[in-house]
Amino acid sequence: MFFRELPEPLFTYNLFHDFVNAIKIPDYMQRVQSIKELVKQLPKPNQDTMQALFKHLRKVIDHGEENRMTTQSVAIVFGPTLLRPETETWNMAVHMVYQNQIVELILLEYEGIFR
Image (cartoon, rainbow, N blue to C red; front, side, top):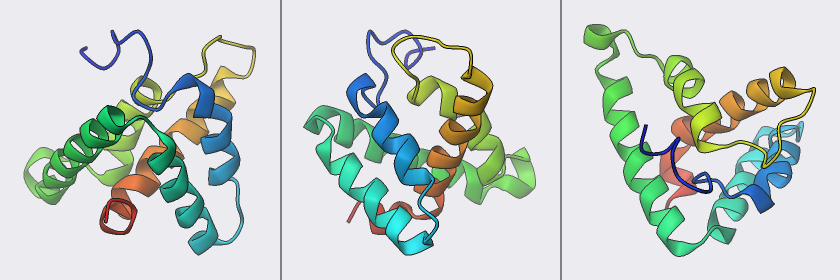
């Protein structure tokens, strides 16, 4: 609830479309690099909070045998909460796919993105 009630999501509104465009990059390593650069453009408090949150979520995923939370499951739960457009449009279902993919990529590439 905390992240959902923030006046602006952790991934700021002004970078939403940049993150969506980055996740569409065909080359995996370029996609990761682009996401990493966008994370660095976020305000420092957002970066720090994101790093702590994703570190915790990685630990949740590491205990997937017990809690049944996979990387994809966590991304589905947190994607729309952490990353959303400022105004809702007709293509919210499409956005949700990208939101989940962005969060999933950051979870998978946590070490590379936050070092």
